[in-house]
Amino acid sequence: MNRKKVIEKIAQIIFLVCAVIAILAVCSITVYMFWKGTSALSKVGVPELLFGTVWKPTAAEPQYGIAYIILASIVGTGLAVAAGVPIGLLTAVFLSEIADKRLSGIVSGAVELLAAIPSVIYGLIGMMILNPLMYKLEKMIFAGSKTHQFTGGANLLSAIIVLAIMILPTVISVSTSSLKAVTQSLRSASLALGATKIQTIFKVVIPAAKSGILTGIVLGIGRALGEAMAINMVAGGSVNIPLPFNSVRTLTTQIVSEMGYAEGIHRQVLFTVGLVLYIFIMIINFMLLRVRKRGTAND
Amino acid sequence: MKKKFLAGMMVTGLMAMSLTGCGNSQTTAAPQANATTDNNAAADNNTSADNNAAADSNASAEAGSEDKAEAEVKETTGENLSGTLTLAGSTSMEKLCEALSESFMEAYPDITVTVEYTGSGAGLESLTAGSVDIGNSSRHLKDSEVEKGAVENVVAIDGIAVIANKDNSVTNVSSEDLAKIYKGEVTNWSELGGTDEAIVVIGREAGSGTRDAFEELLEVSDACNYAQELDSTGAVLAKTASTPGAIGYVSLDVVDDTVIALSLDDVAPTEENILAGDYLLSRPFVMATNGELSAQSDLVKTWFEYINSEEGKNVISSIGLILPQ
Image 1 (cartoon, helix red, strand yellow):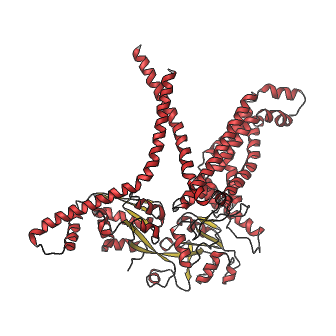
Image 2 (cartoon, each protein chain N blue to C red):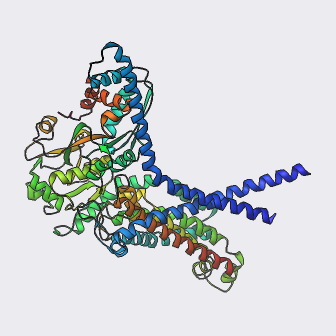
Image 3 (cartoon, each protein chain N blue to C red):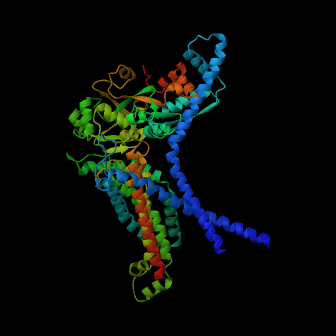
């Protein structure tokens, strides 16, 4: 009896320690990011840093404006989600409502494979195939332009396309499972009332699976916002206004590309960039929690 | 049960706090650690000097003490020397460090050389913090770094080559035109007598040693208008090779036949021209030490002796770098 109790106790302690490690990691990362990220804010000044548009960290009179970098992250993520979500959602509808078992097996296998491809591969393909295509397009659109700076195809648009493809698996898999979870009786009722299959899908099934689909979208936003490697390879990496054919730099690539050689305030500002990214991700996670809560409340 | 759980949580909470506390103190304690390693080195020197003096007092008390110290170093650099030598810094110096450490470890099998490529600034930071023996820098040291105790030892000279896409018909640019290209004042190759092709201006990220050196040598610091800022030498080479109309800059030794190396003011980027001082874009490769070379550990001294030996010089020139005069 006593021995059993001891074993129970030990097991409980092991579980507790494991659970605490995760909490510990999150807490220490949060503390570290705020501690490291805020030191530059007081040295550079909050408005100069967050709303300044000139990034010249190594100049004789350095300027650390990250407004365009924040904006590029927001615009890039927003447009990638705008392009990726409709495709992802319709694929999910196809998988759960329309395709027969064999076809749906093939498509969902392909989607799973898409999710497993490392981001550096997306970057490589983007660099070797997408960028040259973009450069041709750029030359056609800006032919004879004196003011446009030619970027060789490494631009925001390439980044958006790569990101849109990268978030597809997340959106598809989460949406598919929530569409499949919609009870069959709802579909039957709709069809019995005389609605067509397409009407049933758009007026009944998708609204019923709304919270799951929103979860997929929010997860996709998180993935797009946090992606660094692929963007670093296709977006050009100069700090510019985020226009489609401009070379841009996002919050993630800003850290990746400059951390190696940065020193002093430059380095501290990069931590602030990390903090801004971290705050964005936290906001997205809170959104996710709320969406999920609403979902369970509706059920 | 509940009480015990609560107690457990509190303990772990305390642990968390103390852990983050450690994080704090570590960084502030770094200079202290640095100081203690310095003291150690000094102590080592003293004892070896003492031994030296004692040994030599038998023979001749008159001999210069400096000569004795040198003799002592040469004795200790025999096969008995063992340990780990740590270097950190410039990514541009990777090829140099790999080649040197490989042949060095062949000559001294008991010594392990580890090199991290963290960037010039980061390497010098590690050096002055005392976490590495040598800080690699692909630029001259800044005043702030010298103030912290870093001492510059130039081991090689690197040329920066201006490269262009293979389809480009222009093979020579003047330094003024090059500056104009990078400032965004010249945007088409036709303005320089080439074909009608937009110039895609490729460069390195802010903080890169190559970019610092390029902009400083060309006198376009902080005035460049890059279309692409890439974070490695290889990326610049690859993008320049694959983008029509592209122009970029890389270390001279990595230039291959996928791109054209442009002449500058009619001077080709060659070793002879760089040594003669005719070629504008050249920079030093520095292996900085914390304090003067004479105050370093035997390991570090052995490393520099090796670099200055015929063998070491051969290694440096074999990878396309130029020996300092």
